[in-house]
Length: 386
Length: 250
Image (cartoon, rainbow over all chains, first blue to last red):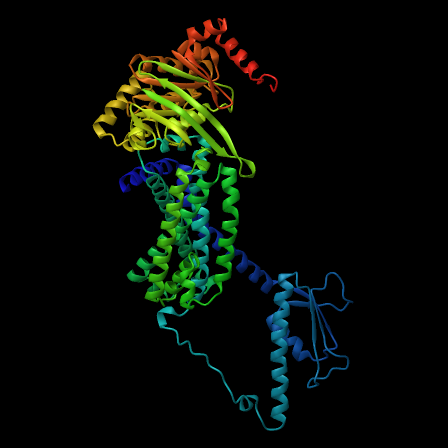
């Protein structure tokens, strides 16, 4: 049975490797696309930030009457003071209470347009300056009583990260990578998996396969192997693309992403990560091959797979911000267990029991789907659609 | 030799009711002859061929291919049959040679024998000029030749072609017709399903006419002509269809 599966697997793989466009789309594009996407995000954000910093704002300051505040503001923000009434050209408006005098207990209002990123930036800067201005007033008032602000600052806080040194700063990594891999494995396997099942029905070539001497299980297994490998290569390529993207944009994503934490990529972590990827690819492949075999044609197959893909995206989004160290129960749920296994590996907190449970559950899930797919190839309801 | 005895087949219909697709089908297809299955669309030709090809299980009755039962010895039957449908559209990046090799491997043939068969079939079907070209770049006629080669790579004793000239132009159709004629001459059993009467008249030694799942005629062409006093098979067919009220719905 296994030999026949290998024959089918080899033929399908050969078919894909002879198509330069597919090779490019599945294996090369993620390597290029990921760095391009993240570099673009990083570039545009940096550009916007710089633009906001260098912009000359049109600001109205009402009732301040204290040049100290304006001097402090000018040291952090370039602005021209608008003497006129508030109009369309006004970026921001700072309103002190009428008759304000430094030292009065008062509320200062900052009017800004939240739809403008520049105005939002300036509003944040102004809020910060107002804090400093308050401190300077407080300092003066305390000095008049022979005190200083630092003497009143009697509690200082210091946060100390107790996570293992090699795990520190990997939270972003463990949040983003499993989500991206999950999406890429499913989207990468979808077109290939549906083409080799429902596509074969559309082309009428499945009947030729079924009247041969190979068993139905061999056909199902061969096709699942093929989709696993294609999906896996796609996800590894996406993973490498992400690593390149984060490495070249470490300034934007924070040095913690990779800066000092490349040591999470130990041999055992790489191997366990590969096993997790493999079983996740297996689930995607067996699910897609099953649904593709169940459908009468490509259109119906797309209809079956779309809700599954949406569920997978929801799973990815929901688990993205969840803690990497979760209860054992979650590791009994296929797909979600792979996400959490990856999170554990990427934060260097791999729990062997969790990893074994995930792997066994996922392999069992794949076996069940392969079994049902082989049953489908024997089902007359399906044979009638070929 | 293919022998079909009292074949019944039904499929689940609407509201769980079964629809009888084949009712008491009996015929024999002999070596060195072409047996033609004629009938309008939906008459049951494809279901009959799929049953012989082990893809469908009969509700009742037996089918044997060279003495092997299609249920009990399905594997053996598959090793001695070749099956080609008009729906089969080879595509992809593999060449005819690679596809022939693939199907040879699936039939558990030895490497040397596969290579020998590829050479034989390429010479016979005139495929040498495009043997290594990707299927998707071939013309319809070339693809049809490749489809035939793929379905007979294991040199089957029995071949079943389900409407093989459907959608083909006259030149591509000729390739199929010539091949079927040659194959029969080589002493193999051929079953051809078609609704093209001229094709059946030219090729078939005996004919089975299926209408609404029933084999309404099963005889040689000469006997049918004599029985219905009609020279053309088409008129025999129309008479049978008219008797069953099938022409009213057209």
